Length: 340
Ligand SMILES: Cc1ncc(COP(=O)(O)O)c(C=O)c1O
Image (cartoon, rainbow, N blue to C red):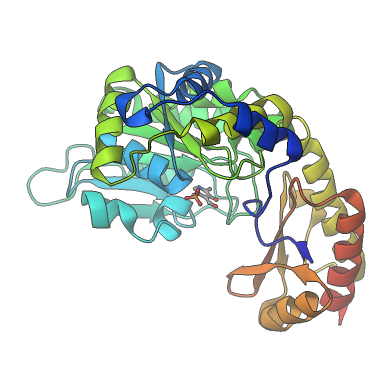
């Protein structure tokens, strides 16, 4: 099977497993795990923030980041297809009483005019007040799109002295860095908190890091434990993340090239299904309308796994465990099925 459902399906490499086996560990609930501390400090430094917190998932890192800024009953603004509002199963409201309003953007980006209209930091006693805005870079359900730094800087300027905080869902911020050449820290410095994943394109089995101001991260540490997600000798997992930062960032160029290859091959056979020019990172969206379920099933029968992420939209994600030969074979299968 060539598994293109998600970049989360990767298995740890031999080098990564060796690093995990060799990791010094301690009890992280006591803040005594040297491998966890090293990963948290390194990630915070890379992203230009004071402190970091290692978490079991990107969803948890997002929830802890958003919770820091949005008190129960106040609101978070984000794009309508954002992972925080669409795919974290309402965790932000179920755990922390966060309400949301959304804008729409073709590429999952920031519509400054819409944000200007929606943002009401002090809405008075009858309307919900805006406490924070979340942005996703790259944007998963928009097809791995990278947001221009200038657009994000303009958002930072827009919120200015309003007190509204900015959270970046950087689950695939490393893909944005590799695709754009803009260091992850350049994006991250525009935000008050940032979550990054180690278990997507970087290929670690588990883990994300939330970075932000030291007091916010200290409070997030308390909430992580309160939510039942404090962990003990987590250094074994942190070591996988550190290994991934050392060895798996630059290689994501291969994933991006494989995604472009798949898009170009499908577009040759069925031009209306995908525009290769829109493929910026490791995600390809195939707009196949009513054929979506048929295509996913027939591709599966031919050994290629994909998923459906919206009406008529089949998602293909390349990653560490998909080599160039796999990508060529998958491209050929998907092109044939998309054409028929
Ligand atoms: C953009 C984005 N943010 C957050 C997450 C959540 O990560 P996790 O699955 O580790 O909770 C994902 C997962 O795919 C994602 O795509």
